[in-house]
Length: 162
Image 1: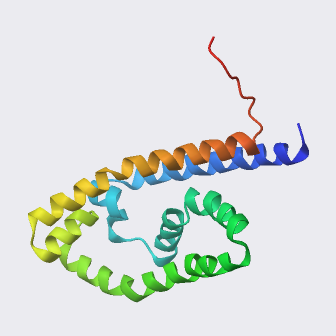
Image 2: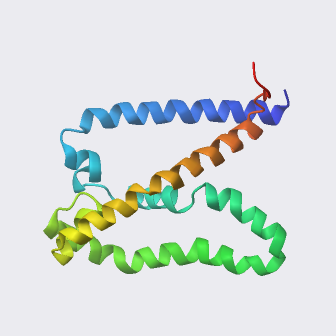
């Protein structure tokens, strides 16, 4: 096993330990659905920013962008600027207004927020159905993450049927 693989394993184990610790601490603070869904409305800008980054910069970014760069060359730098600068700038432009609106509405999810804002149950259900199909996107993220861990942690691959 190479030294890079060993360091990757150590980092992965430390990451899992930190996630379990944070999950345990957070479970003690979760008292109702509002605490679970939106952190009781008490999440600060750093937590929300990290949450946005984790959502926005998904496996598609880390695994897809290098492939695009390989195919497109230096012209792909514009995509990098859009990913790194465009997303955060867009969020900064609307985040304060959206937060103020939600303080009045007390919505717990995007379908609730849109349904409450436009007073439309059809929009609420439609948005919920669209988000339901994100299961396929999330499955792709798990496959990409598993492939990444398979390569970085040097898991042996057993092929064929037993």
